[in-house]
Length: 426
Image (cartoon, rainbow, N blue to C red; front, side, top):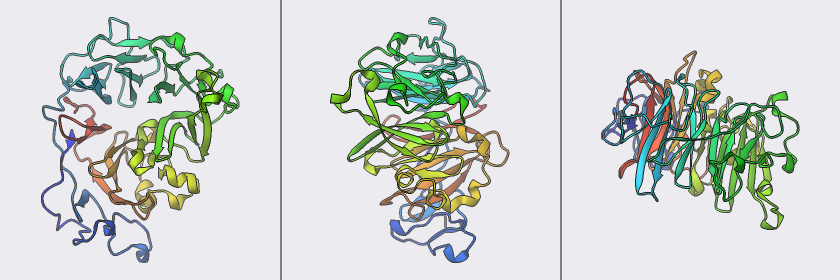
């Protein structure tokens, strides 16, 4: 379901309505217990509201799909992942959705062929999420249930599989610098354990498992950073991300406790693909999962991610570490305490650049499905700090969201909440 453009009228009867003021002076939700800490422009309640120009108005409405978002799924299927795939040099586009054992495209109501190449995609519940990456005019998918394949699709032919021999299949896949990376492993060796990722040789076909040698490990044996096997400790990989600024371009290896930042190695130091990257920095804050890591791009020069403790700016975390008062979610810490943090690994995040909003799809209380969207408005912010961002709370009454994804569409942009246990997903 795309979230359409903002309503045309101001919400003059909405709680916390404020009069017209410059954009930088608009305030969001502040849940501080001390009334003196709440600025005049801030809101003590911000339910289902959002910035509307230089005013605070109603949030976007919800529509149940149109010709752009009509992936045909039979009723009762759980949507576990969705990806907008461009292929044929960008001439063709497909919205590929994974639902309870099958993959569909937006332009065809028939499930994609997984039988020809014996691709395993299990019919499991909504928590078996998928991640996606594009490489060499094909899309790749990893995740699902234990035993599911890492599979690929070229837009025309049946699904293919990479016949990995890991203890369990990877949960995460990511593309950076013309490499594919996989993580979320569960084995007990240096090249197959919860604290490493694997990547293929540069310039080779990633569909051939022989091109993923055991030496291509990050953090790895050759990088002297994987001290012991992860299964013997409490730290594990939660996916990958990237961070770009004017003078920096990093691959991020996410764990539940830390974030490792890597750069491409000096060409003179590269002896092969196994030495292609060098460790640059370690950020002492963990990330719940790749699903909740949001890269804001080089223009913003920052990234936002979610941990069990709060929402963080990567730039602020580099400066201040794990200091609670620098969390971007510090103004909404009371709301944060109401979340079902046992489901943090399933929380979803996405960036809506035209509206300047970072949105997280989360579960509250004891709910086992997502029922709230935490909206962080960063439009006009010179830097991301708790004082500069604006928070709103959007409730999903009557809608059970499972996956959150920005879609470009046919000449337009929309944020899609992929629903659980319903028919047409997007």
